Length: 146
Image (spheres, rainbow, N blue to C red):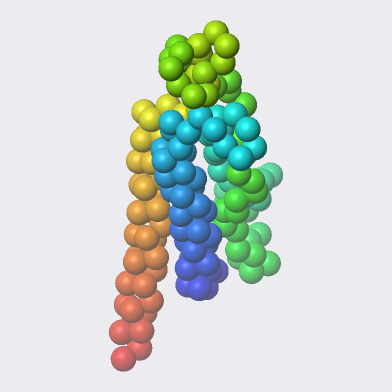
């Protein structure tokens, strides 16, 4: 695989993790949104990543990819809404309270979102490190010839 393949693979990871970070930020920003244009509270969103399934052992897969020149990366297949029910909080004075006095709040758990945020940040940083390592390797290869 050429060095450009490394950059391409890391670029797919960077794009996917950026969308994941944006989605997490949206979830946190809407954690108290009780009314949306669609009706009801905001529904937590999650990003679904897909990649090519590996059907053989690792070494054979790498050899096959090298022979074909195939470049595998990560893709975002969908941004889905969480199906968990909303949190029901008793607040009879709230404008969105139902007749029993309960308000439907989004199914967003800030602790879960922060853990997801840290994971996405680390994955993003790992892809940046891979790009930097590939650049250092490319520079070293150029200095050998000179």
